[in-house]
Image (cartoon, rainbow, N blue to C red; front, side, top):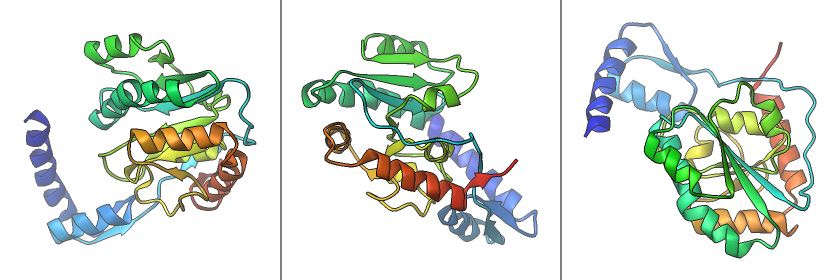
Length: 227
């Protein structure tokens, strides 16, 4: 009910602000169309950009699989994703993978209940105090983007592509981006599909280096913030 009430407040703010400007720009075409329809104001699109982390190379998976999730944990979509990883994904990976794995979850603001839940999972390392992300993206074999709500285009997805990581994402995780599944990222929408994609990468059935390289090139061509 609290979130629903908040959404109604934002709806009113959107309508007022959109009519206050000649054009309101958003990062996602879908959001721009929705706001224009709701408010009657003119909207446009300016894509999100993320800084260049420097030269990055896609990496082959070694003898231990490293998974990464990044997102502020006081934001409901990210909290939902973290719970999904611990409660639904990790138990399936224990049975599906032949090699050891670990998951790094990076994000501030976790509630006491979520903090306790993350602490119960031996495969999960929670990093609430990370001051920079490049050192966490670089060793990651796979970046997980299991989101089912939110808005705009996801900076975490663009950051992962910029760091030449293989991305597995739900439709919401790549919302507003012109990436193609199986080319720039791997599509999944539930624990079974995430597990299958991770296992296929781990056993070499899918070439993660090729997917990550294509994702990096997509970021360079479309969302690279130059110095």
